Image (cartoon, rainbow, N blue to C red; front, side, top):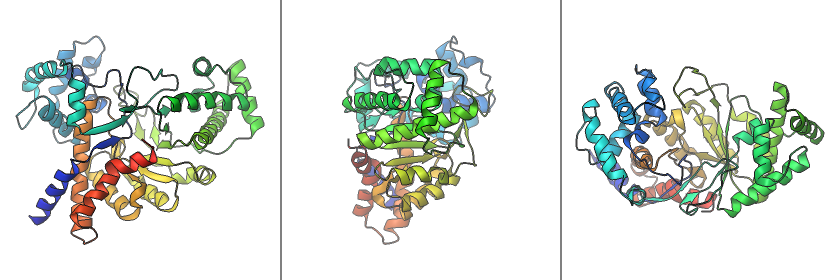
Length: 426
């Protein structure tokens, strides 16, 4: 019982640490949910309900939102063993005054009405921010987002670059880039000019990172200027590039982005290994999976070429965690970053955290991020992580005599706030 009391005491203190959440998909102009539909519409619930037998009909845009919530709740008893159900129960208890032990379809009306009452309050966003003990949360901004109308010290912009790397050969993306930079890209010099203006714009609006999600087969290497000039000019003229040519162009654009990260001193978040549209019949955002063919050996040239760029790295599978630990152990510019997607359940977080906490310098770890689409999800997700973290610190550090309780809590402070504050300069 001593161990349990120790973990609970640590968790209680860890919950007092203000959070810097370094990755989310929150819209700062609509940060909180406006109804229960916004909560249950999170892809984890739609994909789990669909996997457990729910038809996709209730997910149609014109389906009545209250009835959609009822349909998803109708499948809750089939997924009440999952961590994601635990998040929802935590939201209901923390924000909607739910007092029960289990949530079923019978609670649909009560929860819907409670959500309407709470979420319609004019200070609801402020309430959620305060209850979540949030200091700031990072956004995911498309390169042509206006970055206006919100407090960038609270909602920190982050330049997401997937479209630039993988779709610059399309007319639509080139036109979007030209509209925000005034540069029609047709050669490497023009690409660097456009990126320079783009990075300056983002940095002037408080951006603290650049980020990208990368497929399993991507291998970042430099591209000869002549080859890149030729592909950029061809894409400007007709956009008709073969698949292998698009791959070369993607590598060249990615390398140029890394160069800009060095020039503007921005960390480059790499989210590695997602294979898109594996389950083509899946619900929206419930189609992508990881791919075991991915290895960080594909990124060694990048890490070696840019020693002065910090690369916070997320991997999609727990199975790749040992490789990430080893790279962070050796490379000064590689940082472990959160527990992403399919690794974001307690069983994997605990194993992966133990390895990171025992092997990687403590100043080189970003413990967690919410990946949330609504602010209400920050609290339950971090509660899950803090619960696991407290247990690992209790077992592996305090009981083992490595740290006393105060030192263990300070370690947690690095993981939850101070490392992110230093690495991203917020």
